[in-house]
Image (cartoon, rainbow, N blue to C red; front, side):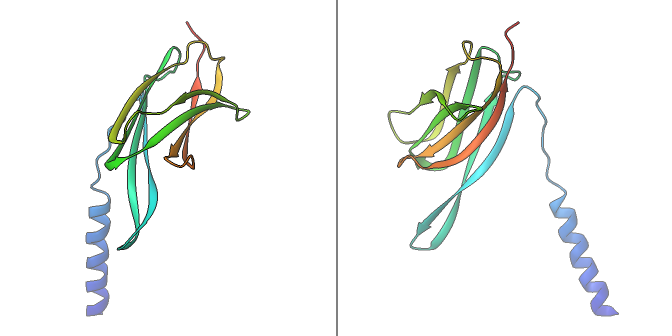
Length: 135
Protein backbone atom coordinates (compact mmCIF):
# COMPACT_ATOMS: atom_id res chain seq x y z
CA UNK A 1 0.00 0.00 0.00
CA UNK A 2 2.86 2.35 0.86
CA UNK A 3 4.43 1.77 -2.59
CA UNK A 4 1.12 2.50 -4.26
CA UNK A 5 0.77 5.82 -2.42
CA UNK A 6 4.31 6.84 -3.38
CA UNK A 7 3.62 5.94 -7.02
CA UNK A 8 0.39 7.98 -7.00
CA UNK A 9 2.17 10.95 -5.43
CA UNK A 10 4.85 10.87 -8.16
CA UNK A 11 2.20 10.65 -10.87
CA UNK A 12 0.25 13.58 -9.40
CA UNK A 13 3.40 15.73 -9.34
CA UNK A 14 4.20 14.88 -12.96
CA UNK A 15 0.66 15.66 -14.10
CA UNK A 16 0.66 19.03 -12.34
CA UNK A 17 3.94 20.06 -13.97
CA UNK A 18 2.70 19.03 -17.40
CA UNK A 19 -0.44 21.14 -17.02
CA UNK A 20 1.36 24.28 -15.85
CA UNK A 21 2.14 25.29 -19.43
CA UNK A 22 0.71 28.73 -20.36
CA UNK A 23 -0.26 29.44 -23.97
CA UNK A 24 -1.65 32.69 -25.33
CA UNK A 25 -4.21 32.60 -28.11
CA UNK A 26 -4.00 35.29 -30.78
CA UNK A 27 -6.53 34.77 -33.62
CA UNK A 28 -4.54 37.05 -35.96
CA UNK A 29 -1.60 34.61 -36.01
CA UNK A 30 -1.12 30.98 -36.97
CA UNK A 31 1.71 29.66 -34.82
CA UNK A 32 3.33 26.32 -34.25
CA UNK A 33 6.50 24.30 -34.24
CA UNK A 34 8.06 21.28 -35.86
CA UNK A 35 11.27 19.32 -35.40
CA UNK A 36 14.14 18.56 -37.75
CA UNK A 37 15.99 15.33 -37.03
CA UNK A 38 19.74 15.78 -37.41
CA UNK A 39 22.39 13.10 -37.01
CA UNK A 40 25.48 14.30 -35.13
CA UNK A 41 28.36 12.72 -33.23
CA UNK A 42 26.02 12.59 -30.21
CA UNK A 43 23.39 10.65 -32.18
CA UNK A 44 20.09 11.84 -33.59
CA UNK A 45 19.11 15.29 -32.30
CA UNK A 46 15.78 17.06 -32.71
CA UNK A 47 16.10 20.71 -33.75
CA UNK A 48 13.06 22.80 -32.84
CA UNK A 49 11.69 25.19 -35.49
CA UNK A 50 9.05 27.74 -34.45
CA UNK A 51 6.91 29.47 -37.07
CA UNK A 52 4.13 32.00 -37.40
CA UNK A 53 1.93 33.36 -40.15
CA UNK A 54 0.09 36.67 -39.80
CA UNK A 55 -2.19 38.66 -40.11
CA UNK A 56 -5.16 36.32 -40.26
CA UNK A 57 -7.50 36.41 -42.08
CA UNK A 58 -5.02 36.30 -44.96
CA UNK A 59 -6.11 38.65 -47.75
CA UNK A 60 -3.29 40.89 -49.10
CA UNK A 61 -0.06 39.90 -47.34
CA UNK A 62 1.21 36.90 -45.44
CA UNK A 63 3.98 37.63 -42.94
CA UNK A 64 6.07 34.51 -42.42
CA UNK A 65 8.62 33.85 -39.68
CA UNK A 66 10.88 30.89 -38.87
CA UNK A 67 13.09 30.65 -35.77
CA UNK A 68 15.69 27.99 -34.97
CA UNK A 69 18.18 27.70 -32.09
CA UNK A 70 21.16 27.62 -34.50
CA UNK A 71 21.69 29.18 -37.93
CA UNK A 72 20.58 26.94 -40.81
CA UNK A 73 19.51 27.47 -44.40
CA UNK A 74 15.75 27.17 -44.89
CA UNK A 75 13.49 28.25 -47.74
CA UNK A 76 9.76 28.23 -48.46
CA UNK A 77 7.27 27.79 -51.28
CA UNK A 78 3.57 28.56 -51.24
CA UNK A 79 1.55 25.96 -53.12
CA UNK A 80 -2.12 25.94 -54.07
CA UNK A 81 -4.55 23.08 -53.39
CA UNK A 82 -3.34 21.32 -56.57
CA UNK A 83 0.27 21.39 -55.35
CA UNK A 84 1.39 23.99 -57.91
CA UNK A 85 4.00 26.46 -56.61
CA UNK A 86 2.63 30.01 -56.73
CA UNK A 87 5.26 31.91 -54.68
CA UNK A 88 8.80 31.16 -53.52
CA UNK A 89 11.23 32.58 -50.99
CA UNK A 90 14.91 31.84 -50.41
CA UNK A 91 17.16 33.86 -48.10
CA UNK A 92 20.56 35.11 -49.18
CA UNK A 93 22.39 33.76 -46.12
CA UNK A 94 22.02 31.14 -43.39
CA UNK A 95 20.43 32.49 -40.20
CA UNK A 96 18.56 31.40 -37.07
CA UNK A 97 15.68 33.87 -37.61
CA UNK A 98 13.90 34.51 -40.87
CA UNK A 99 11.10 36.96 -41.53
CA UNK A 100 9.59 37.69 -44.92
CA UNK A 101 6.38 39.04 -46.41
CA UNK A 102 4.54 37.35 -49.26
CA UNK A 103 2.23 39.48 -51.43
CA UNK A 104 -0.83 37.21 -51.76
CA UNK A 105 -3.29 39.85 -53.02
CA UNK A 106 -3.38 38.37 -56.53
CA UNK A 107 -3.98 34.79 -55.36
CA UNK A 108 -7.49 33.40 -55.68
CA UNK A 109 -9.32 32.73 -52.39
CA UNK A 110 -8.79 29.14 -51.30
CA UNK A 111 -6.55 26.72 -49.46
CA UNK A 112 -2.77 26.96 -49.69
CA UNK A 113 0.33 25.58 -47.95
CA UNK A 114 3.60 27.17 -46.94
CA UNK A 115 6.11 24.37 -47.49
CA UNK A 116 9.43 24.68 -45.65
CA UNK A 117 12.58 23.18 -47.23
CA UNK A 118 16.13 22.51 -46.05
CA UNK A 119 19.30 23.57 -47.91
CA UNK A 120 19.10 20.46 -50.10
CA UNK A 121 15.53 21.14 -51.21
CA UNK A 122 13.96 18.43 -49.03
CA UNK A 123 10.50 19.39 -47.76
CA UNK A 124 10.56 19.49 -43.96
CA UNK A 125 7.07 20.67 -43.09
CA UNK A 126 3.84 22.03 -44.57
CA UNK A 127 1.79 24.82 -42.94
CA UNK A 128 -1.79 25.09 -44.25
CA UNK A 129 -3.63 28.41 -44.50
CA UNK A 130 -6.70 29.80 -46.24
CA UNK A 131 -6.56 32.88 -48.44
CA UNK A 132 -9.67 35.00 -47.90
CA UNK A 133 -11.49 37.18 -50.39
CA UNK A 134 -10.34 40.83 -50.59
CA UNK A 135 -12.78 43.20 -48.93
